[in-house]
Image 1 (tube, rainbow, N blue to C red):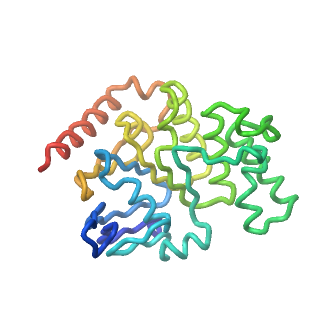
Image 2 (tube, rainbow, N blue to C red; image 1 turned 180 degrees about the vertical axis):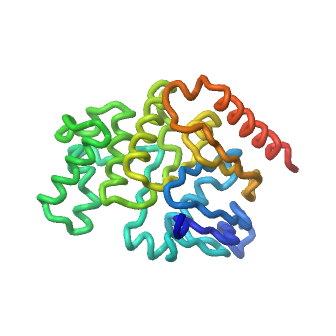
Length: 259
């Protein structure tokens, strides 16, 4: 499949390292993610899921171990704009119109006004919001705001998308719709996705593989492959889906029972 999108080797993260109040969030994480994969991270609260994602994104550094993104350091991958990030809060600027929010990373990267405009129009079409470019974020629903955040994260065509519970604050029906939309975009662009979630059904529905983490300090307890074919609104009613949600749930129960 070519060079891995992410290779984490022996990654450990201790906050306040060397002090009396040191807290180890992750320990000895070894994980490889292939190009084009959709990998979800799931585990008990406080197990280090978001910490792992932030290490992949070079927002924080590991205390030990290393991370490579497309064969280079995470820091270099950030400088090369190899990945985009989306969080639970859309993080849009209310004083900038939707189009201007999408164009912000392109503006910072020095793209011309015309090139930014063309790209933001493409992204608005991609997330099915072509008529909302001149609206302000506060005029949009929560689901629409998250679509704008995804459009912004993908605006510079990153090969990797890191997502930290982007649908966690949405109601259930909107969340399911957004999952379908994300899979549509993922298939269309061929982007690699690493996705943090607390939701077992969400992990089963979206993922090629689900990484189950142990309680803090987070370790990889198990990796569950999910082969459900092309997902659609009927997938959630299938026997295969129920089997996978049960398998993930049982893995989580076993980690929660760990001493």
